[in-house]
Length: 215
Image 1: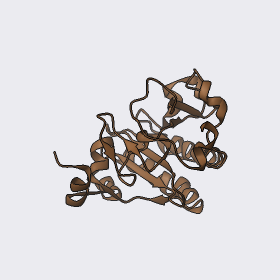
Image 2 (image 1 turned 60 degrees about the horizontal axis):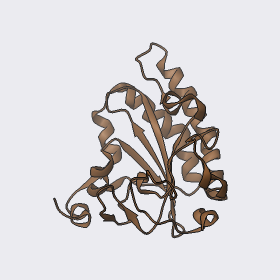
Image 3 (image 1 turned 90 degrees about the horizontal axis):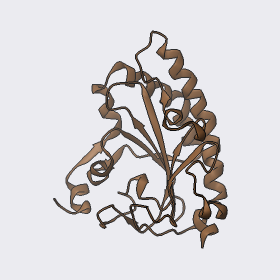
């Protein structure tokens, strides 16, 4: 296997072209996200990465839609993970990538090729963080006659929750979360790991305004 930079040069993955071959359930979700959620991200100056380096796709898979804000040394990142099994639901991954990102195997990844889980602090968005993984799924997990309405409602919920995400990115990682033992550190944020967590799977180095509270 070549280095990440070689892979990125040789092959690219274009996110929107993948949906032409997906199920109608995923397409309904994608249409709802495109009309309801994605414009909110664009208004907040998050840029959609339609051309994602192959190195990135190898870390995460080809079912992600990625938005990033690159106006500082740290990059707030939002990844929408669509179901691979044809169901119309998604997960939302959150993090703030820094210039020094590392993989599970100890390989340093360029900041513009790193997936969100290489962020020193990595979260999942949830409608209620105390309800477990089911509350982290937006859309429908089963095929329903009224799934279009369910997807529309969850897209509206995601639109509201994006304001929570933006505010969190603006305020930065709270210093109190250094000692957090429960993953549900916030009503709508589930922390999978932070830079102080001995169980974390990468050595990415905190940097920038977002991480100022843990220096």
